View: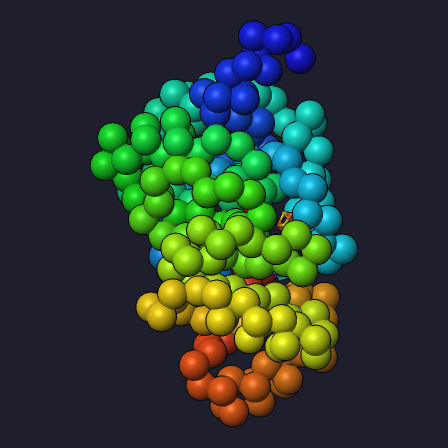
Amino acid sequence: MKNEVKELVNKGEMLPLMEEFYTIQGEGFYKGTAAYFIRIGGCDVGCHWCDVKESWNAELHPPTNINNIVENAKKYSDTIVITGGEPLMWDMNPLTNQLKSEGLKTHIETSGAYKLTGIWDWICLSPKKMKLPTEEVSAKANELKVIVYNKDDFRFAEEQAAKVNSNCILYLQPEWSKRDKVVPLIVDYVMQNPKWKVSLQTHKYLNIP
Ligand SMILES: C[S@@+](CC[C@H](N)C(=O)[O-])C[C@H]1O[C@@H](n2cnc3c(N)ncnc32)[C@H](O)[C@@H]1O
Ligand SMILES: Nc1nc2[nH]cc(C(=O)O)c2c(=O)[nH]1
Ligand code: SF4
Ligand SMILES: [Mg+2]
């Protein structure tokens, strides 16, 4: 990559764009809401069950000018979900400033493992054991969405819930490949511990992106 482009990526003026699509938010609090998704490449958290491993290597995704990303996004929706990869590996200030100046709502899907940048109307924190969230993301998260792959994830979920603010909405979401096994455990857990809610990847049931 040219040095000039590298510098722009470092400043968040360009971002490695994997894909963008208009769909229905499938998960969490905004489940069922139409939104435009922008998927930024690059992630080194390494979840073995990650459903977008193609996003991990940032070099496979073309550095794209944020002006072009925003000009395109605003045609589709007033709600923009920034996901990845791990979007907080990059400086999200330029992109979100520009989205906000167009009057759009900015939502992020993040593991919280990197410094919080950007102006967000909604932060969905999905923490990972291998690379824990920073204090700032935990404190500012609007929803906490813990993926349940096995029983230890209930312990991890409580540990993470102790770090979020009191308005943060708490979700347990089955890991997709283990859903038959863990859904009954999640159902029992939520009935016993009703501060938690169930989140499903409804887009996968609807067969949409
Ligand atoms: C692909 S990640 C990208 C954003 C960020 N890296 C993160 O993990 O939050 C988007 C969401 O999908 C969830 N996710 C990824 N793979 C999953 C799977 N196999 N089953 C259930 N949820 C999954 C993540 O935990 C996260 O909430
Ligand atoms: N429909 C839909 N909803 C989603 N919510 C979070 C997603 C993500 O991959 O970040 C996602 C996704 O990939 N598709
Ligand atoms: S942090 Fe997100 S993108 Fe990265 S490996 Fe885990 S689920 Fe996938
Ligand atoms: Mg997804």
